[in-house]
Length: 315
Length: 294
Image (cartoon, rainbow over all chains, first blue to last red):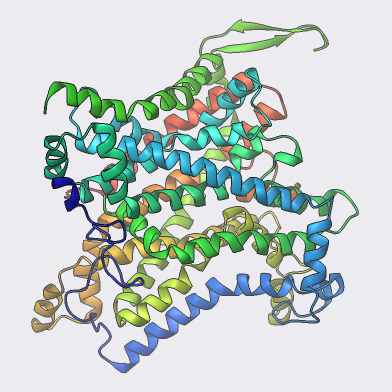
């Protein structure tokens, strides 16, 4: 039975992702690292440079963590880089109860749009990538050209007419206005095509066909299983993109009950200027919390997105 | 491949094709169509507006619109400073990582990628508060050192945004360049060392040419992002509407024309113009930078 020769889903068929331990670069070193700075002075200089860059990268995050633990007085009067009192729980309580817990509503919305939208988008992208990579049909070049060409389309050119079209059919200010655009993601298709080329051998498909499996069955029970790594990467990158989206939700979402976290934080961030309410600690605590899901996800799926980043770069 | 199979293969791409038509081609066609009209308001603007076909008038207006063209020029000049600087820092850091043991390189890489994990809007909020004289630590630090920093002053807004974008982008670009560096055959270094080349010479003559394709790619992606700069200035505008006005970047102008001025046809024409400029800029950049790269 040829169909049983597929790898189990747990093993990763991709060369690049099969580096075993996570945290190893996808392209393996052949020899030991290049000891560029043979001299101790050089090595010290390099470490110093990297430590400085690390401090620059981390200190804003550190400041945000510290700021989220302060009350209003501490925020304005104490040293920003060190703690003063522990008011994180009060801040969280204030954040979750402000305007009847609208922040939790935004969090749920962000998860809905990024989660469901990316899941649908990933499935469509995997099917498309598979079709482009493993079938030679008329018009294939045109479809792929459209995928690559769309990377250059400015977001405003798509979003504004989309807003008008959606408003004509009554979709503006509904979750659909966010979910539907997520289904079509050219970059996901491009990645899915690259992954298919790397993981799905022609011979396997031929063997499955000789065994009498239908095309749909081959796709759902063989191809998708072998593409778990690629699929996870595509999903992760699409999720991060949607979670970070700003222009689209700003355009198609009106009422605050449909807003995303980004939109809500943007609105709060502007409140200081116009009204007398000081929501600075709300904004900062909310900003810190909005990083958490993304950080957890990116850390848990580190291996996947690293592959994605490098694959995108190699082309 | 058997003919019927070909069509089945094409069928896998049908959902995407349908979606692409409705979410990409149709909106673009709609924008182009709308851009050929103008709404003429009669009398004092109290009467109803009438639509008139005006051909390329909107485009001519756009090309002679000093605010729009000025914003493009501003963003391009800014890109010419910020992108090379950011890529240079990313390249140096990638070369530094390449000189360490794999274990140490990994630790630093994870740390340097932290900013990239933070959503752009949140990153902007964090930096705006760091810059803020009321709650941020930077202004007191400047006072201590004898500088009179005001990060929201007209002359400082671009450097402030530039620093934010650099902070957010260094890690990502570094990872791309570092991955390309991993592909350099190590034997080349040995050969160069035997010939007596210094490490800096090896970096300049072997490593950097080898990662040129990666540099071109990251540069191109950064330019595409920069011409569409919107989120960061929009958040700055929240705080300092007097320095960051509504015509700060091309996309801000388009957004304001469409949603605040209600001048949708003109906004459509401007977004078509921006798309053409973006395509041209990418092409020129690609031509200039990728001579004889495979």
